[in-house]
Length: 447
Image (cartoon, rainbow, N blue to C red):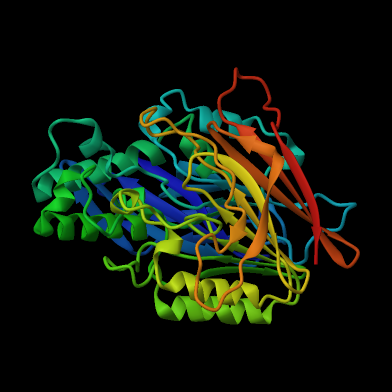
């Protein structure tokens, strides 16, 4: 593929499209993104990002199409001098949460995609076989969309020069984003929102890691972080806005970033202003909310050894503030996350009767069979470790929603009178070419 077209964020009447030229010398003024059915079009005019790694290079631009019909799906093309060079399916979102008589508003949740472990493209094949009623309005990929540290982890020749780092990092993105049939199949079909986790940089980033030897050298760690951040901003999520909100009558979605502003100390996992914006969002909810995190909320602190390998949200001072924010919610909040390489649903009832429902979907494609991965229930209380002045609340892990294998989840939301019905299903990505069948299902009404 020398060109790519991938949908980004969307609203009820607008859609952002991500367009790229790979190893091409295109004048962006000759390129247009076109909604082929309704006729909207935007010329690229210039590039937002131009990146190079070894002999490979990519130029990227995001453009917005507007005045689109609500909750629309239609073909879109990237055209060069009027001829199509890439295609995708454009989508817009509903203004209001659908009722039980209509198709629910559906989010696909996935994380942890190691492209080298999915040579057959099973993620994209499974996605393409989903029943039409389950086809998501919005896909949220909440971390580890690439494993940038995998080359250093899997070879005895780690990258130790700036040029080799840039070559490997860009190559890893291109292998994932162009995999067809495969990950590109999923990306190109309807809106996408992204959040980061450590392997979008390296294991336990921004701290140095023995699994990414170059990061143990301060100069190379700085280069790696800068290059990985540039790639993340170019491919996945621009620097601004740092939080992404999807608003509709009956549901509000907040997609956070708890990695790119993380400190090397245990002080914070996101910018203080971002946490303040989450507080404002929770306080302004008039209906249930959906909060996207890169790591699990229901978790214990890392042990004395594991803290050097994989710090979680509870290992940071900001975690206490996040607990206070969520504890003040006047409506239930569904937390969507991944990272831990299994599927799980857990529920915590707040003092006012509202609930925090955490849905975990991971991995899309497991990075390595060693060390072995085991399914784990959520800690029985929240917070799992004592915090001064905070009384722990009980957490219940849903017994019949347990999956330890490659999969993604769909979370369907419908208005049910004065409540919102939430329906979660897990879809294994290893299949035999037949339409997939969900393994587990969880349903709840929240207010």
